[in-house]
Amino acid sequence: MKTFFTMVCASILATSVFASNCEIKIEGSDMMKYDVAEITLDTSCEKTKISLKHAGKLPINAMGHNVVIVEEKNLSKITQQINFSLGVEKGYLPESEDIIFISAMVGGGDTTELEMDMSKLDKTKSYVFFCSFPGHWALMRGKIKII
Ligand SMILES: [Cu+2]
Image (cartoon, rainbow, N blue to C red; front, top):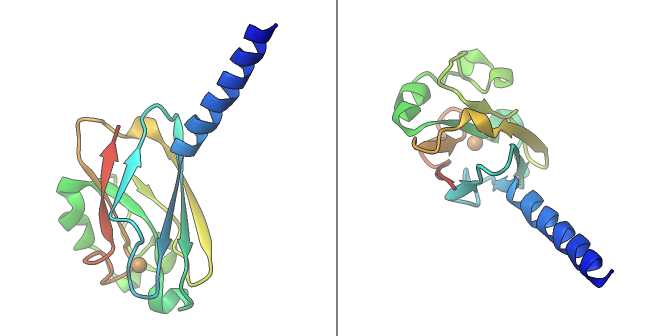
């Protein structure tokens, strides 16, 4: 009986550790910055949720933030296509199969969640995340480590 309880406790502990690895929190600010320079994605998660909180006060049309994930080799190609005329709903980006994940854009005080199907990522490739609000990617970008 003792062994049984130990096993149950161990599995509950394992589940909670596992869940925390599958959820990532990022904050954006009015200073055009993310609070992290690198995120780690765990391929043992079937899905990973990124929660992006805009911790500032500025409105979406002045200081909107999102999270876009692309292969590092495609970063300049994609960021060159950022254009205000494409609209905030599309993150100011054209449709592209090079965009692996893209969250909604949020303004000050808002949070958005992006659920990622981890099977779309290849451990052997390099990925980056960035904000596609015009002009932001130069400062708002970071590396993705896949484990
Ligand atoms: Cu931004």
